Image 1: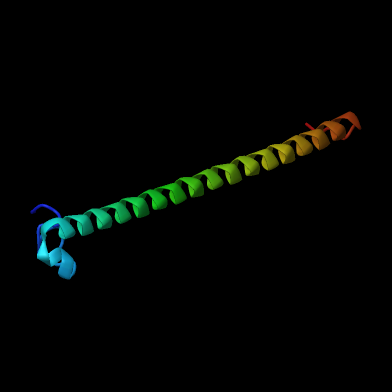
Image 2: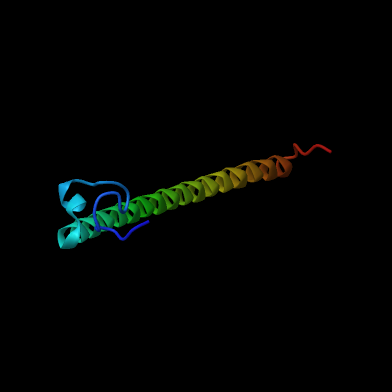
Length: 88
């Protein structure tokens, strides 16, 4: 692969008249495109990180809810044993 901004066919195709001409404007255009795609990639990674953190938070809340339910059921069993309804 040739150097970005060095003319048509370098760095992924023609890319338009300025990039086809090469030179300083072609290099500048290639740099702008590279920056744009890097920023988009970072944005996607950040969105993915946020999504995973939201999933973690949801699951932790669900764990707490289920632990509370387990505690409630154990309390009911203990109460039944205390009231004399214990069975072996």
